[in-house]
Image (cartoon, rainbow, N blue to C red; front, side):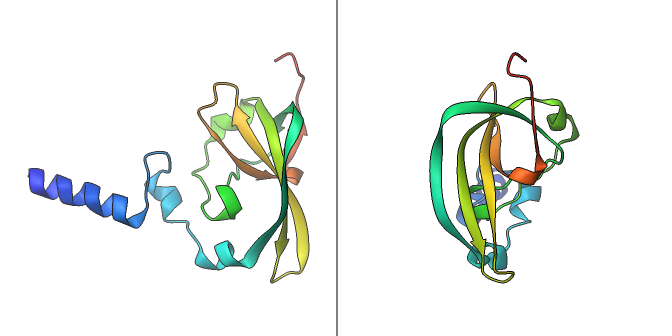
Length: 123
């Protein structure tokens, strides 16, 4: 039994599934999406801006992995600390994504700016 568990842990580490990414999110890896976008620039924000999410579509760096959606996370206040502009090589369009973290600093990801709604700063 120990050998089977050890084998599963080694297999998860070899495939790149970390402890912070759920297995459902790891299944959503897309090689096409990972190579289809090019980061044109990435900059930190001088001041953190509070937002709420219209839709929980959070991605990892360079949009390679989409994190599992959580309904209750749309009620949270997220803080943007950086933003980046990416170029989609297939549609020939650009988009700006903001890097968000929750107030506890435990969860985060890159979210398309169209899914963000400004939140009151005091909450």
